[in-house]
Image 1 (tube, rainbow, N blue to C red):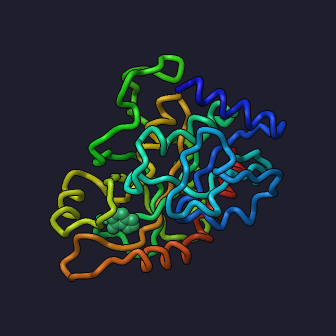
Image 2 (cartoon, rainbow, N blue to C red):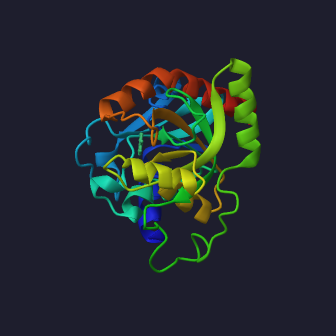
Image 3 (tube, protein in one colour):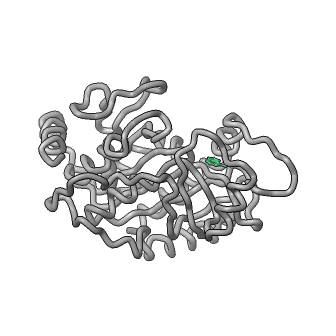
Amino acid sequence: MLEKINETVSWLKSKTSFTPDVAIILGSGLGGLTDKINKQFEIPYTEIPNFPVSTVKGHGSKLILGELSGKKVAALQGRFHFYEGYTMQELSFSVRVLKYFGANLLIVSNASGGVNPQFRVGDLMIIDDQINLMGVNPLIGSNDDRLGPRFPDMSEPYDKTLIKKAKAIADEAGYRCHTGVYSAVTGPCFETRAEYRFIRTIGADAVGMSTVPEVIVARHMGMPCFGISIITDIGGGEQLEVITHEEVLKVAQEAEKKVSSIVTELLKQI
Ligand code: HPA
């Protein structure tokens, strides 16, 4: 794997002298950040050696290099999900590449279903821990000790200092923003009501279909992580609310400005 990573990083370095400090996965909630990045270079995924070939939403997926809040960022516009058929290694490969390209912090966002009864649609949740319910792990297989340890510590997947700072920023701005536990399932089905209840019972506050693999891979390499969720729907309630992808996108779009402003300010403060 390291050979492939090095090959991709060498290619990137042959294209640009830019070295990122921060890797950002522009999931739901951070798409709007692209407008704020002072872009220096944009590379479609299709041109990057060893990047997985996009299936459905291939077009428009690109790596953006530029400045945001005075920090050099490498932003992945377009994330790969397990439910699309990528392997865990494929969907997290870009995180490895950005680490070896220079990034020493990973910022991720996503849309998720709230299972904490105090959550409302449109709330934000800064992720302070995670539960992997995907039944797979991107580190399965032979371990390359040059990348990270065989049995990585996961006692603090999300950086405590960044959580504190981001919460203060959100509170100051008057946003409804919680901190909580994100659990990841494979999807693509939304959960049954029994599944939402189960997820709540085991200690999660929100559930989604991404982020956990990327954070596992980042932590494997010792990279600090910051994650934030937009609560786009509430799962497991008494009333039978039908969740649609359209509704998820609509709520995510509305909350996007808040997430973007938290991340922009957070970058200023670090
Ligand atoms: N479940 C899983 N993933 C999601 C949800 C949900 O309710 N909402 C947005 N992504």
